Each structure stands twice: as structure tokens, then as C-alpha cells.
Amino acid sequence: MPELPEVETALRELEPELQGRQVVRAWVGWPRTVATPDATVFAATIVGASFAGFERRGKYMLFRLEEPPVPGEAADAAHAPRWLIVHLRMTGRLHVAAAEVEADPHTHLLLDLDDGRRLHFRDPRKFGRVWLTDAPEAVLARLGPEPDDPALTPEALVARLAGRRAPIKALLLDQSLWAGVGNIYADEALFAAGIDPRRAAGTLSPDEVARLLGAVQQVLAAAILRKGSSLGSASTNYQRPDGSAGGYQEAHRVFQRTGQPCLVCGAPIERVVLAQRSSHFCPHCQR
DNA sequence: ATAAGGCCCTGACCGC
DNA sequence: TGCGGTCAGGGCCTTA
Image (cartoon, rainbow, N blue to C red; front, top):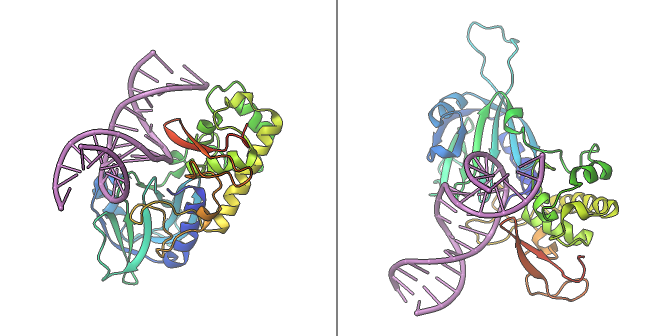
């Protein structure tokens, strides 16, 4: 499942493939994949646009597009930039392939490029969404800061968690608290910080909150260095745009290690369900 | 305002 | 072998 490190990796690896490429044809196979505008309008509108910028916010990919010149209009006429926004959700993947490479049956969006290749959006579970918009801030409005935002200080986080009775694990997944943490890195960060995922968030001491913030930042950075985590079946797991796997799953210390010995103390890793999500933790190291 | 539960989807997996 | 049932899970929505 793509979280911040996977999205960052995929975006950086797509950039050299897409930079400057113009969309010459668009096909939408599953209209609900397009959140906005209407899928037909989406396909008609994106043709002619070129990929000009590559950014990430939380788990969202933002592709800044350059529009073709409008006849009769000054070449330097000011326009709000248009953005293609992509959220891979659970099983989405983006990759570029030669035109003659047949699309997988789970491909819901194809953008033909001016160099003869095609951008594929494949998503077996169909949770992924794309947007075409002049106002990306509206799509991203609910997101909290990036976890490495300097403004996100331990003190600010303590204030945000004060009085909250939900399990800290549930709040780690709340994209309005901070953007980009999903189930894998929430569990890994809680282990690194030595905090029980079931703890009511408001009961964490300032020292624990500071440790947790540092752990989230450290785990995400380490996962980016290893190009993300690839777990599960080959058809639905995370793969990089070139089809290769990430490597951070080899560094997981608790995620999907239920029953296996803790790498620090040897106690069996336990699994509980919090906020409808599996949570994996060491009952001895995480208090 | 916060918390909890349902919903969307389908591949994988389990038990018979 | 085949079949039905269950699970996973991000983000959004509804309900309490």
C-alpha cells in the first residue's frame, strides 16, 4: 500500500519519464477513477497538456501541467496552472510503457504521450482517484502538515493531541494531523518510539510525543532511502514505476510480524485491530 | 468537536 | 476442483 515513501519514490522515478511529455490521447476505462471533472471532460481536457512539474503532498502526487498556447492569445498570457492529481490509495500504480505494451485488465486510465509511450494507471481494487483541477488546494484542504515540516514542533503536536481519547495509532493515520503516514509506518514508528498503539493519544507525555514525532520522521526518511515497502501479492502490492520492489519491508520490525520474536527483546509480536486497521506491536518494548 | 462504523472494491486465502 | 465466505484497508461519509 503506497504511503508517503512509496508515493515519493514513484513520483521521483516517473519525473524523468514524463518531464516535458505531452498528452496526445486519453482513455478512461473506469469512470469512477476520475474524481473530477466528469470522466469524459477529463479525457477531453487533458489532451494537449504537457507534464511540467512534479510535487507530493501527503500521499497525493501532483503533476503540474502546461497547456498548449491558445490561438489568438498572447503567448505570455497568465493562466492558473492546471494540475493532474493522483492518489494511489491501496493498490494503484503508475508506470510508463511503450505503446505496443498491452494494458493490464486492471488498467483504468491511459494517457498516450507524444513520444509514442503511454502512462498507465492500474488499480485492481479501484480505490485510487485522479483529479484534473486549477485549484489543487481544494483537493488537499483536509491535509495536515508534512511530517518533516519545521512548523510541526513537539509542542505543537502535544497541543493537537491534548484531551484526545482515541488510540494514538488511530490518530497517526489521521491525515489532518499530519499527511502521509499509513498503516505500515504508523506501526513501525510506534515501535521505534516504544509506545503502545492502544494508548489514548492525550495520555502521552510531552517526551513521548517528541519521541514519536522523531520516530515518524526517521522511519519515513529511512523508507524513502530504501524506495518504500513492498508486501503482499505481486498483483496488488506496491511496485516502483519500473516494476521493481521497494526494500524497506526487510527493515520492518513489527508490521506483519505477528507471532514472530521481537528483534529487540524476543517477545512474540502481537496484533490487535484499532480504527479498523491491523496494528502490530511488541507488548514488552511498547508501553 | 470527537469517535466510531459503514462503504467502496477485488485478489488472496481458508474450510469444506 | 470448486465454491462460498472472509479479510485487507485509505479516505470519505454518516451517525451518535
